[in-house]
View 1 (cartoon, helix red, strand yellow):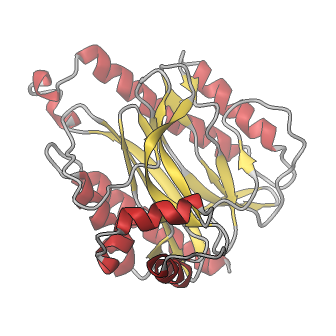
View 2 (cartoon, helix red, strand yellow; view 1 turned 180 degrees about the vertical axis):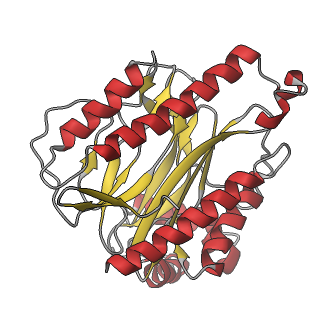
Length: 312
């Protein structure tokens, strides 16, 4: 089992590095996402969920719909969140980069943000990475999950920034991305203790804003919930494809649209969601529209520490 997690983690680390190096002005977000998802397959895995590219105040759950024309602009704060699985054993990781940051020394005006804004974004990235490292350093068998959140919050607030309080890390099991345990990013009363063998995604978010996210109307990522009677034949056909290909893992609407190519795609999806067959992950943004940085690794809990499977 550990070997499978290690393989998934190695794939994620390699693809994360390649994706980070790709970030540049005018790059289509869809092109970056499709590169990540295909490269995971090229290296012997499968996407554990659609690649998320969340820019600036968009905090999580943005993956391109089919035909997305959105592009990156210099100065954008870009969060790359990716996951791979090998036979259901999942690794999940995220990194934040600034589009065109290399221009800062030669011609800062090309960044489309001020030097003050650039310095703040760099501070956010440094802080979220430090918060991730400090949280991971506390992980071992028997540690209370509230302690992990306390370490994240303290690291972030020491830099006069805020953690995103209503987003958390999570436990994972085979074929299950969120298996029930939440890892907070703030101090909270929680008596649950992590145990040897637990697989955890540690996932702090940092912002100069109010530190909370809210749902947007759009949802481009979905997950199978349960079987229910469906009248539409096309909806039943789509549901069978979802269960066969993705089980309980999140998937992108564009993955289905590419294969089904149905003019009734949106109608079918509305039917599946309203019937509570599918769960929609709405795009999340920071409540005050402040920018957000994210960092994430997957760890396996050990008696006196943990193994970081997505580090390199």
